[in-house]
Amino acid sequence: MAAEASAGVSLGGQRIVEFTLERKRLLRLSYRMLGSITEAEDVVQDAWLRWARVEDEVRTSTAYLTRIVTRLCLDRMKSARARREIYVGPWLPEPLVEPVDTHETITDDVTVTLMLALERLSPLERAAFLLHDVFDVALTEVAVVLDREPAAVRQLASRARKNVQDARPRYSVRAAEADRIARAFFAASRDGDITALSALLARDVEIHSDGGGKVLAFRKVIRGLERALRLFVSAQRKAATPPILLRTATIDGLSGYVSLDPNGVFQTTALGIRDGKIFAIYIVKNPDKLRHVDV
Image 1 (cartoon, rainbow, N blue to C red):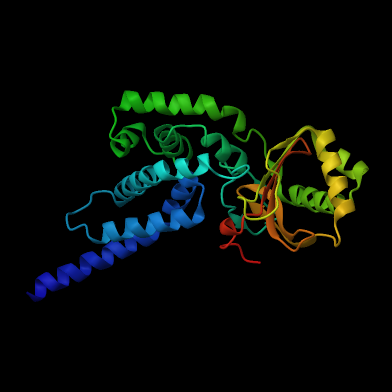
Image 2 (tube, helix red, strand yellow; image 1 turned 120 degrees about the horizontal axis):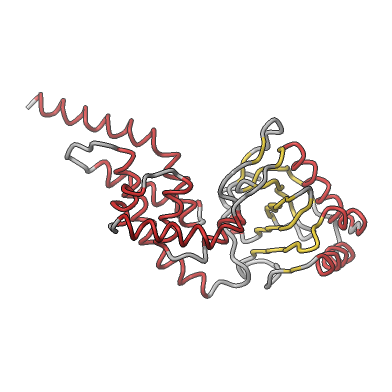
C-alpha cells in the first residue's frame, strides 16, 4: 500500500513538472488558435485537469499535451465563429501586451495582421498551419493530433499557407525604431498634425477599431491615407480633452501603445510598420477584451 501511494505521489509530481514546463507554449498555441487570452487560459486549465487524470504512461508529454489543447481549441472554435458572425463592428483578437525591449528586433511570426488572416481559414487549416509552420510540429504528429491522414494534413497546411502568405511578416523592425514611430504617431494623431501623419502613414493604410458594440468605435475598417487624415483631424477638433499615453508596448508582435482616448476610454493600439511607414492600425477598445491588460 505504501509503495502504491508513493508511486501515486511520484506520478502526480511528475505530471505537475511536465505540465509546468509546457504551460507557456500551450498558452501561446491556444491564444493563436482562438484569438482570446481568456479562452486560452480556460483551455489550458481544462488541459491540466485532463492531464492530471492520465494514469497510463505517456511517452512524450509535449505531443500528448499539444493534442489535448488543439482538440479543446477546435471544439471552442465552433461557437466562437458563430459569435463573430453577429459581432458589432470589426473583430480583433484580444491584445497580448508585452514590454518594449529596445535592444531587440521585432520578428514575431504571428502578428495581429496574420491572426486576422487566420480567421479566413477553416479550423482544421488553422490548426495545421499553426502546428506545422509556427510551432514546428512534424506533419506526422499533426496528422495524429487532427486525426487525419498525413497527405490530407499536408494539403491543409499548404492551402492555409497560400491563403495567409501576404499577411506573414516579410520584414523586421528594430524595436527602438518601432517605438519611436509609435510615439511619433500618438503625438501626431493627438495634435491632428497632418504633415506629421502624412509622413508616418502609408497610402494604403487601414484602421481597424474594435469596440464590440460596448464603446464608441468605427463600425467599418477605414481604408486609405486621405480618409485616415480626415478622421484624425476631425477627432482632434471634436476632442474636449487630449488622449493620454500610458505607455508604449509590443502588442501581438507589433509596436504600439496603451492609452486613454479623449473620453477616458482605455484602449490598446498596435501598428503594422513596413519600410518605415504605418500600413495598419489596430485599436482595441472593447472592455471585455482588455480585462487582462495592466493599466
